[in-house]
Length: 429
Image (tube, rainbow, N blue to C red; front, top):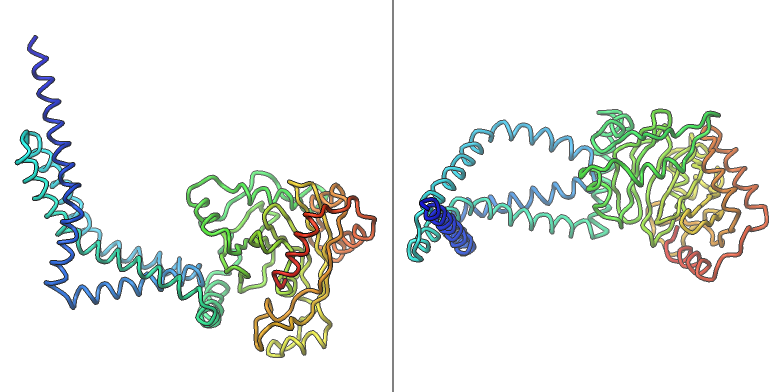
């Protein structure tokens, strides 16, 4: 009979604690704002400098992650380890204060059975928290402004082009290729993964359909999902080590390009936004040799690079002179769509883009001649993708060309034709 009052009493104490915590949370926003205002009035110069520094740092970090991801991650990791060692003790002391304050609040709230006591405790602890957290809130707000500012800078063509030339090409590319051996670095970085399914067939050919499936699925970790799905509207690239069944960490680019900064020994796989389509650009075809892949939506494209065609030509010559000396590049790509069970061959010849501004990058100054894709046999097309002679790109191109010479296996639907025409005319690729 005596246990019941004790049980009721304990429940009342817990309700007291919950009520006091509720008062603290209710008063915290106002207390935090007051803490920020008091802090700024007490130290206006210091807090202003800290806010500006935080905004500038996060803007630079955001730009670095977008335009120079590898060097930014490595330098940030080094900086994080250094600052972590310096701030470990202060952070631990702060954590102990928070834990101690929480215990004290609950202890005092245990017997706070009336509203006056609860109000007093709520205001007291909210004010203390607001005062201690105010500097962190100030820096966090400034950091958010920095991210927005960095994004705004990258959305402008002029700053983006300047950063590409002076940050990506000069710093990032040098760091990738000289400091680490870029390809091996990407293949070993956190974010790369090994496939359980072998990419190579017993006859020495490669099954690139399995490569695509592995990249689509990827390791089911929170980190990899964050890397894969940050922004589906920008291009993302990986290198694939077929012999080791390994896919590299991703490189992120812009809406219309992604730069490696080195000539990969392995095949490459990169994405195009859905509205762009899987057709390789002139830049895609001329910057690499060998066999490569593109995925856009459900479309998977196989194409051959022709970098070797321009080997030995002076890099400082204008493209018009280079192409005049060695001939303009041509395109022959095979695109399959497993979802729709369709396949098509896309061909083209590079030509000047009359709408491009003088000095525009390759992706803008040259485009493929307009040609409607040829719809071909789906089974024969997937057979090619499942048995790619990766060391004989000319043979692969010949197989695709022979496929294109056969009568189309099916006439494209009106919807497919309109989609093909829209992509040809709307992307400049």
